[in-house]
Each structure stands twice: as C-alpha cells, then as structure tokens.
Image (cartoon, rainbow, N blue to C red; front, side, top):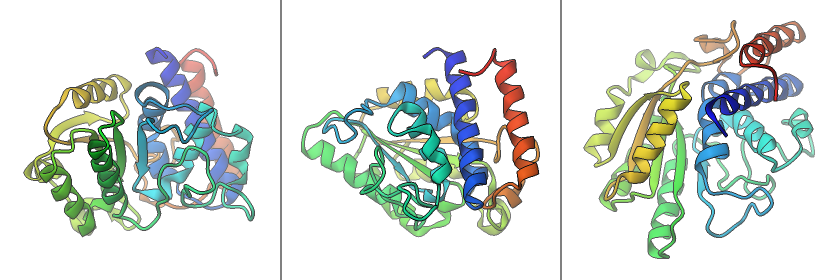
Length: 279
C-alpha cells in the first residue's frame, strides 16, 4: 500500500473501532483510536502474516499488552481479512469471539491473550527468545500503553529483553498522555520514557505515532538495529480522528451514545473525503 492507501485504511479502522464500541455499548475507544495508524501500518505493511493461515509458523507476532484496546486490534484484523468486518458489531456480546480482551483461542489472528496490564511484554520477550533459540527469522511487536508502563512487570521484562539482546523484539509505547484517571504525568509519571528503556539497553526511536511516514521510518530503523531490542516511543492523540474524543481522558473507557456515534462517524467520513473517498 502507498501512504494514501494506508491513511484511508487507518480511517476505516477508526470507523470500525467506533462502530464496535457503540454496538457493544462499552469498550475503550480512546486508546484504540490513538494507535490506529500503528495497527494499520503493522498489519498492512510491516508484518509477515497470512490471514488465510493465521497460525503460520514463521509469521511475525503481535502482542497487544494494553489489551483493553482490543477494538483497535479487532478492527485492523477484520479489515486485513481475518474475519468479516460486519462481525465487529458483535463486540462483547454473549457468544461472540470478539470479547472485551483478546483471546488467542477464539479470535483468528490473535497471538497472545491479554487483559491484565503489564503482562504482555513478558510474553513478547518470551516469544522473541524462542525465535532466537529456534533460529527463526520472525519478529515480535508489542504495544504498551503509557499508563500501563507504570506496572513493574514491564521493567522486569525490559531488563530481560535488553540483557538477552533480543533484536527481534520491538516494543511500541503509545504515549497519548492520558489514562483512566487523567494525565499519566499526574497519576504516576513514567517520564522520561525513552531514557528508561535506554537504561535497559534498548535502541530508542521517538516519533509522532499518528504520522505514517514516521512509523515507516521507525520500523525500518528497528529492523536494521542489531544486538539490542528497539523501543519506539510514539507521541499520539488519544481519541484521534473523533473531534469530541481527542485528548479527553473521559473517552478512555466508555461508548458513544447514538447521537455521539453519528457525530463521530461524520468526523471520520469527512477525513475520508479529504483523503479522496472511502476504500
């Protein structure tokens, strides 16, 4: 995909997020929307994957450590062809394979179940080490939240990954600045995030995580980095693309009303028109 096609797809992924959360009448739109560009780039450009063969042995792995942003992962998986886009409307419903947190047993394309914050990076580091031990070429990508990295287990996993020189591991921190209780810097400041990962022997890349060119350059740099894992610290806008959700901590974990849904979809339709029409 070229940059314009990726931008259009990221907008469609955002529509899927808003639609899923609205249909469920619950969920986490803010952090799903902030990471939509990253989800889109990973699944449409970066990772070696096959929707027709989700368990392909040599596939690249993705771990959503901030598991509550499952609507974002589900939307990109649907648009990538792992399951029907229409199924996004079954989010959190009884009997659906799209529950509030990802489940690797039930959902095609999900490499690791997640939910309890802080655990995903440990799983990702284990996957990366397994790849090294098995002499496989696959890479492992792990998305963490900036509020999530207040969890101590994140830093234990970072110490392990740096010590083991896991250069097939890429940790991405979605630094949208907000968590459920407000600004991350007020709740329990994780700053400076880049210097903390650097102290654990990570290669550091700071980017605008809502800029596809910067995401592309960061992924290329990560692939070319040898002898140490990479941490991409991406500054993003929580609720990106939806006017009333942007930079509003209140939209960390609630669903839009019918009227708010119409407004949100109108915002995203306008973005789609500016990009040259929907896919």
